[in-house]
Length: 158
Image 1 (cartoon, helix red, strand yellow):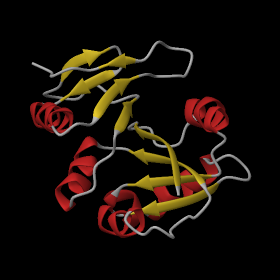
Image 2 (image 1 turned 90 degrees about the horizontal axis):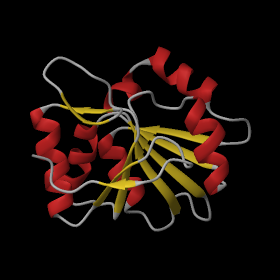
Image 3 (image 1 turned 60 degrees about the vertical axis):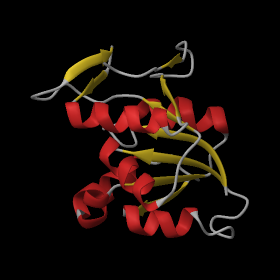
């Protein structure tokens, strides 16, 4: 598996992902890792409808994703986009021992108890702790909505 991009975007597969990120990296498989989506038939249908034609889609729980990501034969030869809808799911994989070198944050909306970090990144204190832990473990965290935007490397969030 050739992981071209790892992205956290609460919107899942949407216009910016389909029309900019997927063509940029010539993606032929999207792997959505989200425990809730795996159980939600409506969400699964929405993700399937949103994927660009000709792009394969896997919707996996964190447990199943760990198994697939650590299998050297899984998705062999495919150019993949890993898509998380929640930072907490990235933490689940990290706790299992799987770490990404780089993660791009796209859109994490304003919710009760969040702090604005960047234009479209709003994090709870728990999410800030997760991001800081990822940074401390060596993962580069980048904020970038679309490829034409200048990528911003996030340092420890206060």
